[in-house]
Image (cartoon, rainbow, N blue to C red):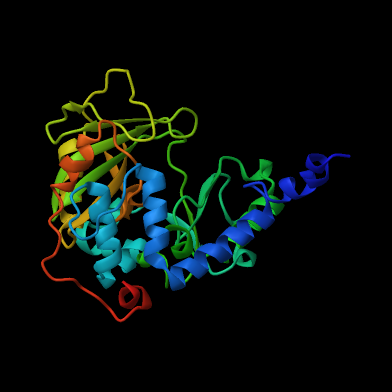
Length: 314
């Protein structure tokens, strides 16, 4: 047996999908977040965008998101990052008819009674991004595995993964909501001080994700990030102007936020508010769009802090 063969079990244990790797990575990120936040931020930023972060004089969209992440604290942002309390904010500003109906909110997995739920629904956590289980037929789901996944999510703190302070103190919960169309498009409005400027449409998210950007006259923009553009002819959504007005209302309190909707026939449903799009660490093609979107963010003239540890370290 050679050395490589002898080390193979360790390689398997340390693969990026292994429990051991994830545990060590979480411990490392938590240590760095608590002791050298900026070093970790700079490392992650360069790995994601391909250039060094400039917080002294931020110019690009990605840099300004990092500035807001480090130096701006508005409690309303944290309230809206929590997918439970965000519903109250949305209801107050644009009406409850734009909220996806829910079947239950749970503090732990053991509270979920599958017998009381319909055959189709969505389970997601309120305190993170991307933690979603889509159930198209509850009788065909491996619930032992899905519940194990949910328990792991409830024990996690997304702040230590993303560095986004808005998630740090959210009390983890599970939301069960109606499953809308299985392959619905979603509409994401990039808003700046209450003004929608750019629309991103995501197509075929489950199977072959493509994304197109448009201006507010629904002209296609030659820009992309992680996914290819959709080459098919895309018509203006029937509720485009209405969604734009809703986005303006929801985004009014913030320097920047992405307001996401689903639209089915004549019904517009709120999806989420995203304050740090792609965590502010995803390259644009062409790179000029990083600067063009960056020019749309007017940073507050005075930093807004609470007395959190992150602010004192910075």
